[in-house]
Amino acid sequence: MEELRCPEAKLAPPEVVIATEAPPPSLVDRYFTRWYKADVKGKPCEDHCILQHSNRICVITLAGSHPVLQSGKAIQRISYQISNNCSRLENKVSGKFKRR
Image (cartoon, rainbow, N blue to C red; front, side, top):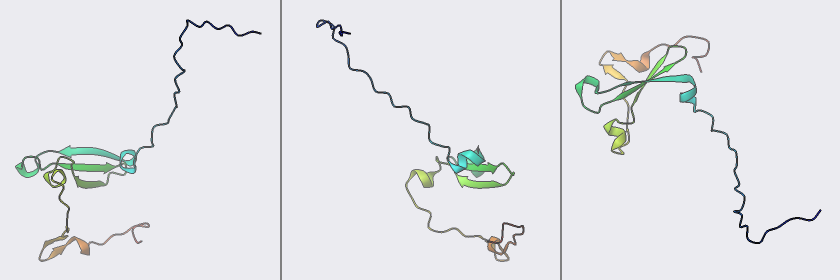
């Protein structure tokens, strides 16, 4: 068969569309529910993010709007010494998978 061509017809080149899959959710997005607490202890912008795992354990983090993260500062150390007689490093853990 002969191809029919019309010199006056100017067709746009075909578009190339590549189907991509959305990236998988992060570990935090997959297993945690995010809760936010604004202005902790009445201090403006001192926002915290509470990550609640499906097993009801919570991890408390700084929210992205917290001044420490907004100013580009780095956290230098974390103290687990609550008082002279109480250190969270002395907490005992139990359970089958907690002893690693």
